[in-house]
Image 1 (cartoon, rainbow, N blue to C red):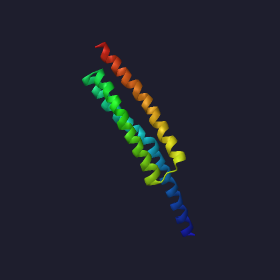
Image 2: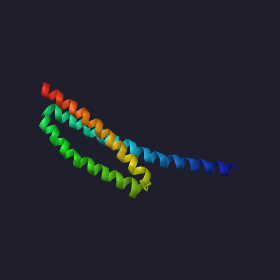
Image 3: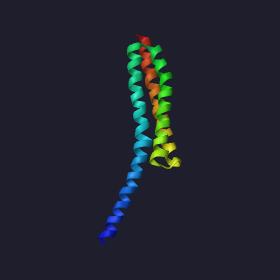
Image 4: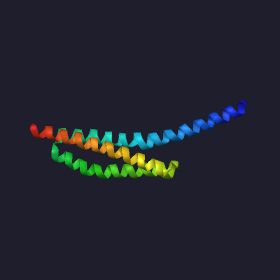
Length: 115
């Protein structure tokens, strides 16, 4: 009887561990990637001006692409997550935070013009 309870608890633990991998890599990782990029972009825009801010956004396209390719490789190939679940999660949260980042940086650039 105790063996069956222990076995089922391990099964539940493994199930939630897999779900947490999807959450950490598919939700939190792209949000953190874009938050870091947003912080650097705001710093450059406010201190160096709009031209450098736009230049960083162009370079940031490459750095975010590398980050997304790495997260895709890490989740699908290395950890073995199901790509039918993982890739939509990853791209959805990356896209939503990317849109928020665009509006926030645009607002910072408009404030720089008013100075």
